[in-house]
Image (cartoon, rainbow, N blue to C red):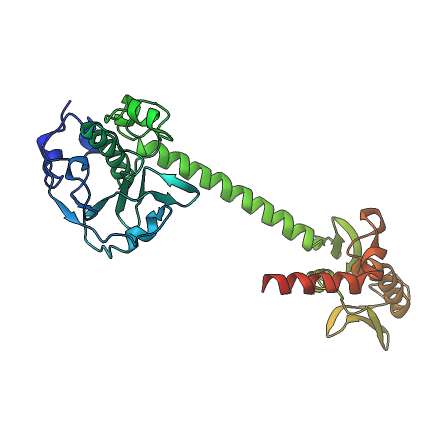
Length: 334
């Protein structure tokens, strides 16, 4: 099957040929062909297409890096560029390849080094197969598992000779881009929900203190368990925020109690956790209530958890070791 007149006209210097992939969508936009000086013209693909002269790689032993060969051409045209060289080619991850394509450079290269045959017609046919394969890569085509498809990767001459110059039925089928877009959107949505849930769980774990309203005031909670009752919502909210800030620090300042007449204030460094008086402390002296509460909360804040959640001593007595580990990790990231 030959390509349509419209698709064939898009390929510079080419006539419709039975060797071209049988799909209008597979026809390439215009491209130019350049060959290495001194290369046998009988080996060049697409006989009807005039070939220019490429910049040859420096002489030496061993394969030529395909990307370096492409960059040597200093190609910046809107069309794709196909290079045909007699030198062996190497590509990233491969010691030797028949051809290589780079979509960013809009260039493809084919090597005749391993494609030569006493029969010039067979050599040209092999070069054409590789050229079609690499040019279709420039159009976004991917490898195919069908051994007879033009997009099947060939690792030896036997596989290359078996491969046709036609796309298989699956590769000729129009891509259902809407389905891929829907699947991608669904995957992104699921991923965003998963990330959101993970972040919320992380925030809950790093911020274990909260508060809730009560008919006669408000309570401060540690992982849903009440640890302090205060007369107002504003006081409970402030206490929960300060306690979460202390909990998040590796080395938080200790809780101290300051007596101010009939009232007592619990502070940690520059922050005030709460103030209380005898009426709000259930009849106990405010200072005594505050000191007992601070004594209960200090191991939890320093140990980053209660005894039932782990070992507070691990954080309390190995604080310097934890700090040094964090500093070392910071240096590695820098």
